[in-house]
Image 1 (cartoon, rainbow over the protein chains, first blue to last red):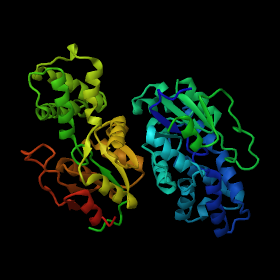
Image 2 (tube, chains in turn cyan, orange):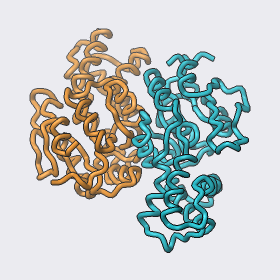
Image 3 (cartoon, rainbow over the protein chains, first blue to last red):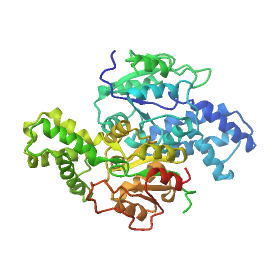
Image 4 (cartoon, rainbow over the protein chains, first blue to last red):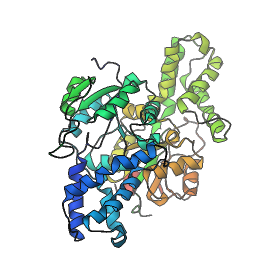
Length: 240
Length: 240
């Protein structure tokens, strides 16, 4: 497909642009050791934390809970899993809990991400369309050197993907028609929702997002408009 | 004052960062000539257009009208002033009107702005806090090379400055306390409102914003936390 109608690329971020699992594991391991946890495997901690991510957002998506920013959901989930590692939020210093919760603001980009985004930005507007809140995305961009033109997504839309409003409000803020915007994501469910609203779609597999045993999203599950192994090659496909 | 508590700088844009009058006048003059207007003074056109800016936003601030993005207000104001120049929106091609309305997306930065912002960005998060809508600010940033970390302001807040919500919602999105954020503006009224909500304040005079006859905002009208003649010297004052 020719990219000629596209004006802006919007990106899923956790997993697609940055390696959340390694970054969270790194800080969690240091935290667990520092506080004498009985279990100090940072990857196990990252995985436990991440398992509560989607259910927490589902409370908002279902309307059972008003929109609550991801930092707050992460904090509640953090407190919920600490006992599994032999710790309790009530006996830990508040600034230590804050520091660990902000591990999600300190994630490394995949090796191709910054060079690929820089190249894509020369031709297209690039923006986040992440479930992460605005300040989280801003801090992450400054940490990882991600050259976004704008930070859009869940908090701006007051809706978590894949709720329709997350995509539709992003189009409104960009003042673009659906076919002028392409979602770049490593997750088929996200692209499915975006396509349902008329956006163009680009799949970049991130087979290590969930670690060496990953079984999901290893390949495209539909005929997405573009499929590339990394952001540099996506730039090539998109003529950037 | 020591800048040590500050985490983010938020910027007024029209007049403070970019020279709207010269940019609008340039495109308006070309437009007026192209369409055989009886009056082809681009600066007169820019001034007439700008005179309707604040009254149009006041309709929203007063609650008489729901939040409407600035591009739309600009378009209505454009159609309203065309007759003063011997033209009528109904007899002009739609793509020409769209092009002229987007003159506000194609404005030159003041000469110190890009270098100053780049330097400030190395130490502080920098974001817009403008009445311009998100897509306008995004396009302007790409046109003028403004290296924002985030585009915040009226559309994100659904409120026009100096309404309180414009400042308060921006703090929420940044997840910062008022004293951690400094507004940079060339307009005393904007700084007055920001200070009223506890933000820090920096005044940079732009004595040519309204042309050679400018009488307002030539000097600080309160003891703002910082006063600098341009963004480079502001960076110096703020230790960036």
